[in-house]
Every structure is written in structure tokens, then in C-alpha cells.
Length: 106
Image (cartoon, helix red, strand yellow):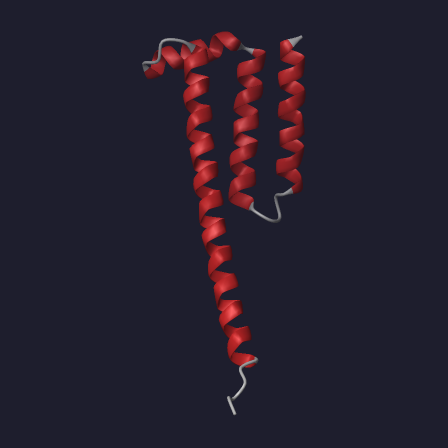
């Protein structure tokens, strides 16, 4: 049952990534790769343990948690950069508006 739920969630995430491909290719490609790896690990959990052992991690579940932490941090960093760019744009627009609507004092 859990494999079905995880597979369905990964499928929804995959559909979202494909829908957003034109807007942000690098993020969509990263999400697609994560979904493919997730599908492989859901279908074959022993493979995650084998990969974890090869990488020096004790269990496959630990490896998945580490990967989720890395992906989450990358997502937070991406959001941070986007917010900074938006803040910069709003500041520039506010300055341009203030200059264009300035009145000469009497």
C-alpha cells in the first residue's frame, strides 16, 4: 500500500515538473531526476540499501533522508535567490515611479 501512495505522489510531482518545464528547465530537470530515482527506490528498496552501502551510508533509508535534506536546501536556496531578485525589481520600480511622479515644491 505504501508503494502505491509513494508512487502516486511521485507521479503527481513528475506531472508538475513536466508542466513547468518551459518556465524553469533546470528545476524541472532536477525534479524529474529526483522522481525517477524515487520510483526506482520505491520499486526496489534493496537497491537503495546497496547504493547506500557503496557510498558508506548504513541504510538505504538514511541515504534517502540525506538526499531529501540536500534537495530541500537547494530548493530553499533557489527560493532565496528568486525573492532577492523580486525585491531588487520592486525597489527599482518604486524608484522609477517616485522619480516620474515627483513634483516641484512651490
